[in-house]
Amino acid sequence: MKNIVILISGRGSNMEAIVRACAAEGWPARIAAVIANRPDAEGLAFAQANRIATNMVESRGKTREAFDAELAAVIDSHAPDLVVLAGFMRILTAEFTLRYAGRLVNIHPSLLPAFPGLHTHARALEAGCKLAGATVHFVTPDLDHGPIVIQAAIAVKADDTPESLAARLLPVEHVIYPRAIRWFAEGRLAVEGTRARLRPNADGNIEPQWLFGEDA
Image 1 (cartoon, rainbow, N blue to C red):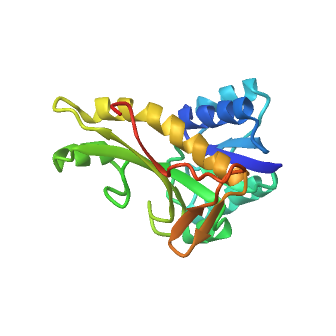
Image 2 (image 1 turned 90 degrees about the vertical axis):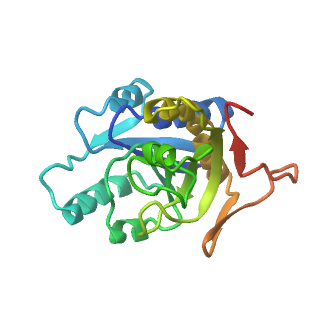
């Protein structure tokens, strides 16, 4: 039984999707804690309602190094096998990411390596992309890089705005992020160099590590 710790900064919709999938699909894992860096993070209430331990580690007014050290101490108190960034709006130090190397994952709202960083949907529209998407990846010291676990794409519509594109992509994120974490919980993910490899399931099958979303 693997312990999963989820970090959030706001409402945590991806966190909610992960919690629900873990319960519905009977993963060999438990959500050990949800930790926020903002006291007004709405997702804390959802976690508490689902009897999940919660912590708040305030990030304001601290150096990045001091905050990361305090955060790591709280995370480690829950003995995590996997740490999940779910809308956690902090850039983490290299020391932090290396501490959890191979057991720290993130979801980014673009088809990495395209458009790392912020304002991904606006940048995709400005570039004239015909597809947009999301990527689940293992976290490394390089921002929004690391071995890719699964990606999903949706078609960009002629009248899309950054807001409409984000809204259409979010339900797809809620599919691929829990799927990636289930694979980890099942012991089927391995990092080999710069790539994340997926081992076959009990039936000898390997699910696709990509999907085409709402318009498939």
